[in-house]
Length: 410
Image (cartoon, rainbow, N blue to C red; front, side, top):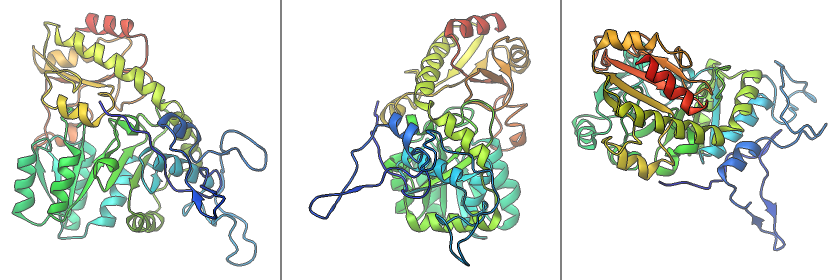
């Protein structure tokens, strides 16, 4: 499996990442490339220059004093446009995804909405996975369809099917989740980026399930990455947020204009909570992945389980691709019950440590029935999920306790 040592992200501004230092010859010496764990703790988070506080302050403020008309301190005038705490989060996210710029939003769907409205126009066509997150599909099918944006549904792990749709008509954007939610299919990001670019389309990757610790789509050719920072980045089930990260400065400026014009920004306290979570992202993801692998292996041998969907299992059709583009396989495990939908619903209600609830990526383990919960909005559509499906967000508890809980529930 691959791993990357990355540096980057935008520099400057309060709490900005350490800039390059001048060299003796008058040139600029770039900083040594820092490891992921170092960036998660330090990028965008220099000690406060006034007090020396090692954690960025919460700038809980709506407006900023100007030194004369137009005399902005650090470029800040109004917190919808920019806020120092949000800047710190955005610089950290850009560094972790190896992007030129990140923008933080009030939710993952707010981030998606802003990106789509920036890049697409009425009359354009986009491709979305045939097992996309229900909220994303609802956005395309029930919000943007009325705006004149059409979409095609395609199995995103089938490159030939994607190429066929790209050849059939002009496509503005190819939307990818990998792993997908909730069926955990794997898309080859590098191959899809080539196919999309050859057809004149941009590739957007929802990297929520993997997190930048496990996968960095911009380094594989994607044009933009979106996150629900509510999930693994925040990591503690106590904040809602979203982000867009891009490699191209001009695209970033366009998205920033739309964000400021529409206002769906992350608040200072939410930004601070997300930054706090990011500091432990690497160690949390290591435990999530280890626990999830053990859970998947146990479920694969259980007589009540018909099928386990987890890319870490060699039997998974996307296992090889996941090995090539991910550091590890993530903390979400889905499985299908041999006895059908009602058995799945009953199992979801019998766990004691796994909490019945939507969302994922927190330190605590969650269980849900996608067909009646997170993906109820796609019932009757091409994205309807099997009724016998259960999705687990495997937390960082003692794994033996989690295994015992699942066994008794099954």
